[in-house]
Length: 331
Image 1 (cartoon, rainbow, N blue to C red):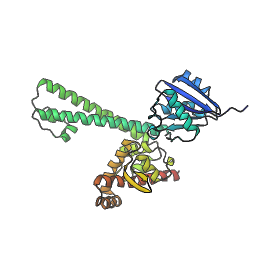
Image 2: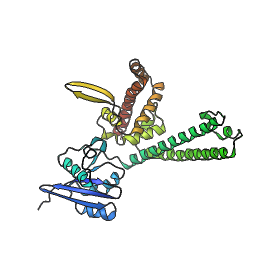
Image 3: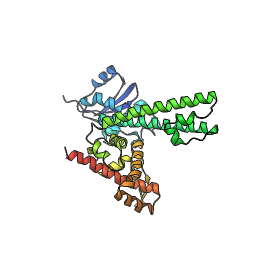
């Protein structure tokens, strides 16, 4: 007798998960630990014809890798595009899993893609580096403030460089000297850590087929190329440059009401670090790329500079798209 297909919604936590099964004329549920035994018990309930839905979270990829060979299809649901669970008036593990199962059975769930591991590792390193960079900037600002409060004006550019020779020429009280030395030590440690991360990120990116093509685009350096590649992943996941721009969140929100269409600010969907990196690259690119410079200048006549540079960033992203696509046809 042929087993019935099930639609399974998963409410995933850090150490356990709740599963809700919907098949023809039958509903059931299960609760499992997120360890080898729990996964093994869950696998026993699955059929090759089943479809599974789970919200995207930090441990979703690992969960998917454990079960993907045992089911027909897995849908990863981006929470920001599926607000039914978040806005539920009765939010329980069972209800969340059941909601996913119901919407899955009706093919109404938004889908998020699974990137290859190399791209996940690249963007993880890029995000860690970004956190360290922000921390370093905060420590430099604190060091600058301490010296200024004690009557010693030292430019931040000097503190960012070999700041020891600029700090210790001043006569500082012992408690202040202790604080300054600790800040100096932490800033140097972060710099060294960032150097290690940058080497690892470039090394990983060089194993992809896209690195050389993206880094050779005017305005995009090695580290920016790494971040952009990590965010995009496989370029074949995007049918057009417009789809890629939408993924980066640099397309305007469009509202249509009573046959009237109104475009407003950009959506800012997707990875914020990827979007900010792209915009930073655009500011550099318009200095050296005549076509982008002319495009930016034309827009800047009627739009504020920030809006003009975002629109130009979309044009730069189209160049990235074409360069990455060319890597596919060259293979």
